[in-house]
Structures are given as structure tokens and as C-alpha cells.
Length: 545
Image (tube, rainbow, N blue to C red; front, side, top):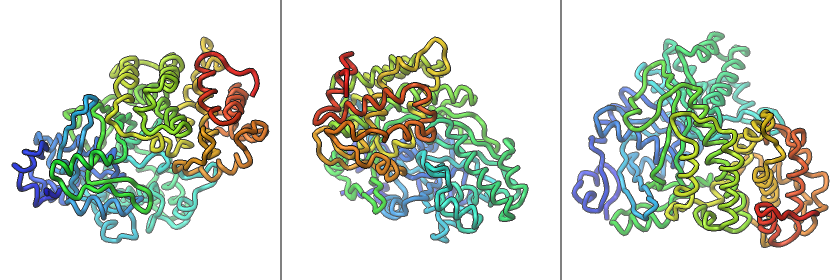
């Protein structure tokens, strides 16, 4: 059996015989250059990073357009580094799953160093600080999920780690944003060296979210005398530090046991899927779809890798915002979340399975075509109708993408304001559109609240996906019972008016009653979720809940 790592890779013929595409560079030399002259640090060492970001750098290294690899940093789960990266010399196997069932297998060796980004691991933390002090560093990018940028809870107060970091300063930060701020402070003290901090997370205005959190911490530290008073000005100086906006798109499910079996059949051992103590699902391989998009605001004070040669679209902020809004608020993410919520309630196993259900496909199509496209502004670099058509007809129905509703339903409270709130705002602001014409979106919001009761459409207890606000939301819906629509009385109005959840007050714009009505309909009894979905999509809504 072959084993992924530097030694095994010496037998290139054995890998190629089994259908693997190999690096066209010497991984050891790239790793040495990465440590000596780091150019790119990436926070978030999970599956989207390896399937997309690391693969971009691999292409540059293969073509001789880059010399150093990426320093991969995990600030959340040390097991990812200890159990997946280092045992395999920081290499991964990328398996692209095409809609025709064919697999493309590549060995990725573009990660030159992997570090656990926490002061509790002094060696790794010192290595990371040294990288940030290096004049060669051009960018630090992020795929840490939207919740990683949050400093406050739903009540507006600071989260415990953030509160502690604001009080204690940059010496031993715990919150990921405080860690980033502390590392930027190292770069400031090393001579105010330039750097781009690039969020590649799948959320609206990602660069602004990153900038706001990092600068808020810096300002608090400076005001308290915990950092140089000029430090915030350094972060606000676009010629020194930039926070480019980006739009990223590539469906990357959890590692699939079916792919693991295929790799073992091809003669590769040690491909077990790991579920860490923190519930991170990761493996020495990563499986993903082929289509991918990355649009980046071209603002890099210290230069950047020539990623346009790997297919990245560089443009201005306005164009990035248009492409991001197209994807995140109308043409993909809202469809994905809708399918995730209903899929969990209806017991579906995969997103592709849902797309074979006429009702669920109809819901996704309505949200995208009828409710989303009217408020899309064509970004120019991507055509919205073509993008949406690819999503509905090819990407979501791909039966070889083993993506689950439960994975997509993770952190839904962090997504509602962007995936649906932005479209609702657009309707409210347009004189030619009526908020009351929205029917798919309020139905999804009602279904999410129904999902939070923890009971599926068969009336059976249902495990809920991780969410930072899960306990608060479940408490708000305590006492709501299936078969008793009246048990919802008075429960929803406070949630629906919460602008942190939805981006606006749903009651104030006239959607609150619609959501409450749909919610009550879904409480009628077993199968009421599917019945409500059918009634609304077919224009045969029940008169009373």
C-alpha cells in the first residue's frame, strides 16, 4: 500500500500508475523556502482551504510562477494539524468528483508548513510571529467561517474570549481575531511592514468583517495602553494594511467514506476519516466538485502571488461586492440553506437527493429565479443567469457530491441576515417590488424556526447541527410542541424583530405575520412540513393554521 508523504512520493511511477497527478516541483525545497521566506499565511486549515486555496498555489508552483508554499494555520482544532497534516508531511490528496462519476486525483504539496496558532503551543506561536515579522510576507488569508469574525453574542455583549483579550492585551490572545491583531502588532513593531489581510470566507462583505473586528481590538488595546497608540492608524492605512473583499465558491463536503474506499482500492493506505474531539471532520484527502470561483479585490500593499494564472479574477471592490451579492444573497447560498433546513426536517441524506424531489427543487428554483434574480446586479465578470442555471441544473444535483443537509445547516443563525435579509432589504427599498410578494424566503425562515424545535416531520427527535446561538434559540422556542400550533403564541415575535439574526426587523417590514403563519402550519402534526411546502408552492395555502 502507498502511504502519503515525502518518502512514498519518491516512487512517482507507482502513484501515476494508480491515476494520481503529482506535483511538478520538489516538495522539500518548497517547504524550506516557505520557512525561510514566507509569502503567504492562511488561517483555517480545513477542507475548503485544501480543495481550493492550496490547489491554486499548487498550480503556480507547478508552473514555476511561485517558489514558496503556504503556511497553514489552525487556530481552532489542534487535532487537524497533529492527526492529518504532520503525519503526511503536510500533503493532501484532492479528489474532484465530476457529474459523470469520474474522479480526478491529485497530490497537493503546496503547504510548506503547518502550525497550530495558539500561544499555548509556544513553538508554533513563535514560528507564526516570526512569519509576520518577515518582510517577505505578502498576505494572510482566512477561511475560518463567518462566526470566526464575531466578537459579540446575540445580546450585543462581548463573547468571553473576546472580553478577556480586550482586557489582557496581545501577549496571550484566545479569540482568533485577537490572535490576528496580535500578529499584526508584531508586524507593526517590526517596522510597520505592509500586508494584505484577505478573508476568503463565504459571507457578505467578508473583508469589512475582518477589518472591523481587528481594528476594534487594536483601538481597545491602544486606548488601554496595551499597544502602541499608533497601531490602529497602521491598520487603517490602506497603503500599509489592506482588507480586500472576496467572493469564493466551491462546494466541498466532508470527506466521504466512498472516496476513502476508492483511494484504498487504488492502493493508498492511511486514508481514515477523522472526527476530532471538536467535531471537525477531516481526512488526509479532500473531496470536492470541479466548478470553482474566486473573485478578489486587487489591493495588496506588499505585492501578491500571480493567482490570475490559476484562474482567480482580480477586480475592484464594487465588482467583488456584486459577485458576492449575486452568489451569497441570491444565486447559491440561499438555495443551499433552504435545502439544508428542509432536508434535515424531511430526512434527506444528501443535497443531490433533495434536487430529485420536485417540491424541494421547486423551492430552490423559486428562491433563485423568481425572488433572487430581480434584485441581482450583473457584476460583468460572471453572468447571474448562467451562474444560477449551473447551480440548479448541474452543481446541486451532482449525485457524486456527498454533501449533507446537516453540514450545510451548521451555523445557520450566522447566515440568515445575509442569505435572506439582504434580499428582503432590497425588496423593501425598491418601489417596483413588494416585500409581500416574497413567499419562498419567509417559508424558509419559518422552516428554520420549526427545525430549531428539534423534531422532524415524522414527529421524531432530530439532532441539530452546531450553531453558536443554538442554546439561546432553543430556549426562546421552549414549550413549542408539534400538534399544538397555539403553543407558538408569543414565541416568534421577539426573534423575528431581532436585526442581528435577520439583518432587519421582519415584523417592521411586514413579513413577521407570514413567517408566524407558516410556522404554525408546520406544527399541525406529522408531515405538516411537507404539506405546508406543497400548499405554498402550489398556491393552495390552508386558510387557518
